Image (cartoon, rainbow, N blue to C red):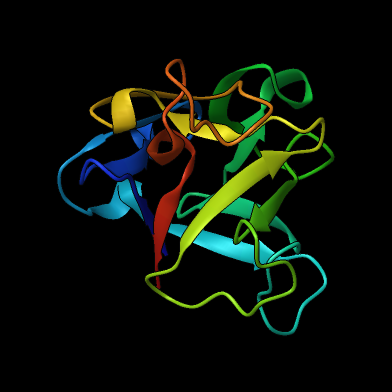
Length: 145
């Protein structure tokens, strides 16, 4: 599974984990592929809590539960490594490949690809943009299965 930004970049766990997460790759390679773990099992639906794991076993983490850095440097998943996957305005709907999703941290911060990709990633805004500071597309990503 991979995440594509609206600017045609992909999320990457630098070094295949153990470091930061960016949104600056133009193609999917090993460092841009992840396992999405639906914590409650079954179908992946909007509103489900998930963990995102690199192929080398590291988990995405919103440091301090959100409000800053997004890394992939944890070897075990706990609260800061838990995200809610959302189809905005469509709670409970089945998520399928190609859908545009948002990821919200445990403290209510959304994962964001700065500049719509081509740069770093963080978990800072508490809303899905749609304003001059944070355009909507920065917090919405195409999920590729």
